[in-house]
Length: 164
Image (cartoon, rainbow, N blue to C red; front, top):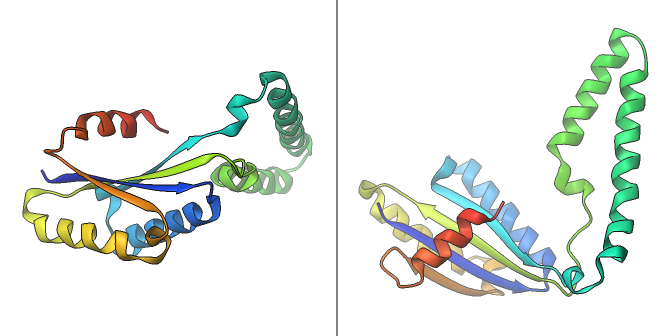
């Protein structure tokens, strides 16, 4: 199976990385690629250099207030209230990225895209390898293509698999 991993280093430009993510998601949906094109972020947070006490206090109150709001929705009586609470709870669970604050502006953002096409789709695989780095949000980033036979392919695959 031809497999390649494209690594794009966006530096501290979180907006460009999010535009690239939206572009990939649109391609996956529009061309019905499914799991043939997977995307993961590798972030080096500048917050890791800060003391953990300052980092922990700022994020914990936001989490507890969100869980308290969910608890208040569940306590409201009636079937209609329960249904509307379930719908809004599902929306909140579906959009956790929107509720989280963006990464710090001085953190380093890398985007890893794995192309995993079957043997009879070699031409499609090559077309995506040519197309992705030529598109706008990816042009501004430093890109690297790692193919199956490259020496650092195993290390990059392990990194890709370890990311969430």
